[in-house]
Image (cartoon, rainbow, N blue to C red):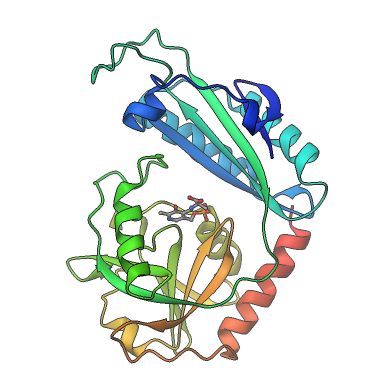
Amino acid sequence: MLGIFNGNILPVEEIKISPFSRAYTFSDAVYEVVPFFKGKPIAMDLHMERLVKSCHAIGIEVEHSVVQAEIIELANLALNNSNGYVYYQLTRGVDKSRSHIYSNNLQCESFGYAAHTSQTIAPQKAKIVQDIRWARCDIKSTALLGNILLMNQAYADGCSEIIMHRNNFITESGSSNIFIVKDAKIMTPPREANILAGITRELLIKNFSKSFEIAEEPCHIDLLAEANVVFLTSSTKGIMPINEIEGNNYIFSKDHPIFMDLKNQFDKFLETAF
Ligand code: PDD
């Protein structure tokens, strides 16, 4: 697998990292996942904008034109005009004092790799869980222990996805945003619900609100029992339906006309818009 470390492209097996990297000791790092469709980057500007915001939020300097060029170079070499993504993280740097208070003189480290994505993703079973994460889920931080704990507990219970809530209001899934279709309306929790502002979510809202009724509004967990379709969105999964929710009488119909229509239109949009 091909990777990039501090601007040098090389096989990931050859990358040497200090155990004192703050990525290693503190998860003091932020990241992006940029999808590529047939070799073309999807919404690169939005991904760079979010990376800059995440960097600013934790006080890391970033030259986004350099990052963008590195991501494109890596994708061109590794993805070969197929579908995939580039993972790219920026870390505060190596800090042998392992100090909670960081020095501003540390040398930022960057690491990325490219991987292919599969064409079709099967519907998944989800478990409803309490959102135990921190109060800054808007930062795309590599510190994802909350997500990992919840997802692995759900996996042990036979589910591959989670639907998180705080005080009974849905936030998002473990590594994706959530949409709920009820009758003709498509609802998604607002950004104020302390979620990651997903780019796929934004593309759907910005480009399909004219042809579909899409509302960003608080979503109570009771809505799940009445939903016609629940689906997740992310850069690696696109639009992915949930077919079963543990302990809930939600029944997924993959032929639901609004869902089918939206998914078809979104897939076409990815092919033509970028
Ligand atoms: N995850 N919410 C969370 C918690 C996420 O981790 C992600 C993305 C999303 C969707 O964001 P986007 O549409 O920009 O991919 C929402 C990525 C893919 C990951 O961690 O691999």
